[in-house]
Image (cartoon, rainbow, N blue to C red):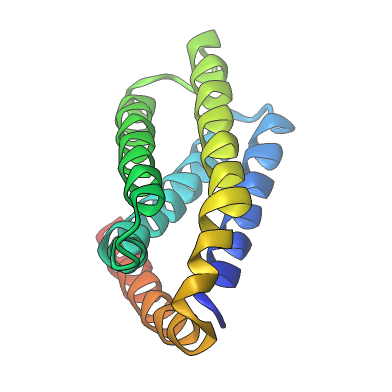
Length: 151
């Protein structure tokens, strides 16, 4: 699977988790879904930062450099919100507010990547995108297994 296709699939998967948590009233179930969102976003940002973004920087264009720099900053903000969520009671109104902010951050970030960065990524070529995709998928699964074992 091409790297861009893998990332689009992951964007779609996490967006569906946000919708799932919105429709859930039970605090234990909300916490379980939040844990799943957290593990997914942690693994997703990891493979982007370790594998995809360095490949994009390899294009050596000003546009790629600007997009990657902004993406790192957006990841930083997502990580800040994720770090706060475990301390917020799922029944607290702040939980819903933080989930809304997180969802909007992720939606914005994914939208920019899909519209702009992935278009530019085509310059890497199909073979390179396929190789990156394989590498990213392996790293994603390894991280998820490790995170699940630690939980």
